[in-house]
Amino acid sequence: MNQDNLKNLQLGMTEVSRLLLPFLLIWLLGAIGLGWLVKSLLILFGLLLLAPILAFVGFRWWIKRNLIQSECPVCRYEFVSLNKSEFRCPNCSEPLKAENGHFARLVPAGTIDVNAIEVPVQQIED
Image (cartoon, rainbow, N blue to C red):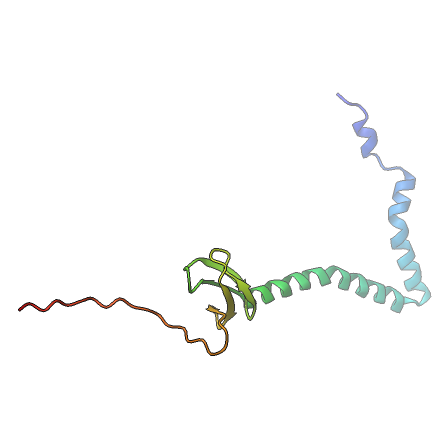
């Protein structure tokens, strides 16, 4: 057994005074009449604690509004991208843009995009 464990748990007068010093300093400033200083420091400390939480919640809200999950119109590969951005499909390297919750091909002006369909042939018997 390690007998030094109990020595590590004991607090001496110097450790207690280091822990109580900030509280005594705040109490002294409040007693002198500098309560506004104490309150402003506490408000600043509270804002420093709340700022990362608010930033995280705001970032999650922004991501939820701006991420689109759809499939490539050329190869039907499904992936995620940011709304209103231009990019290439990771599967077929087709230039695409995200708009209205879907991906669309980027084509030069004046290009007509045509979808070909197969028409079954009917044979006429004589």
